[in-house]
Image 1 (cartoon, one colour):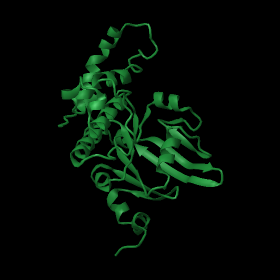
Image 2 (cartoon, helix red, strand yellow):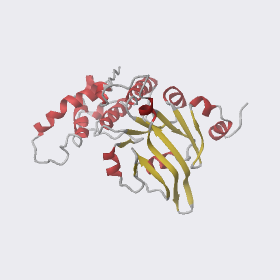
Image 3 (tube, helix red, strand yellow):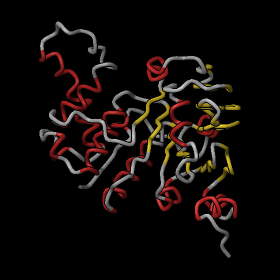
Image 4 (cartoon, one colour):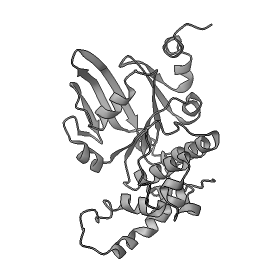
Length: 274
């Protein structure tokens, strides 16, 4: 599979040039301060401060049980924080429900692929486009009404390199291509901030390379926060890395800085290394 993503297909218009508009590129679009979540007497997340920037890929990493998924659930409002605040595009969303947060532009993909297996690739993307196309609640319309979504659906399908299989059932795709389809359906919602939960999990080397290229292109005009265990992907793709351990931030910075922190090595390996 060869992906040939285009900026226009990802819905962001022209890409931001390398020079000029730096304030626009570096602005914080998703922020958490003092984020905490208790489950009975267990503190799963404690005092987490996080800033996610426009046009940047930010990785959230840490050993199993570090609290990464809980942070994702808090940011997307699937869980309410015990304390702390969350801001999206300068709006306080700390007590906002998940559906409204998604409509505001914070969209999440899950670790397990979430596509309709018995629909074609084209129909999966058309279903995702129904809400932004204002067709989601107009049940009385004939099926032909969905044809207005075909052009945009094909743009997204071509952007992730699935145009050769557009009429195939999603169930017939390889695991890697299902994850690619999920990215296309997520992008159909035109998110301003995209949260990806282990997008490379279970993929072969070729698919990892393809999805990395897609994510890099997507991030030209939106913020991406991703949980990822593949540290080579994190090193190659991410502008900033935040390391969690036991629900707290251990350190944060670029990959080179984080990877040289002895506390990170101990957290991952369980022992100190020369």
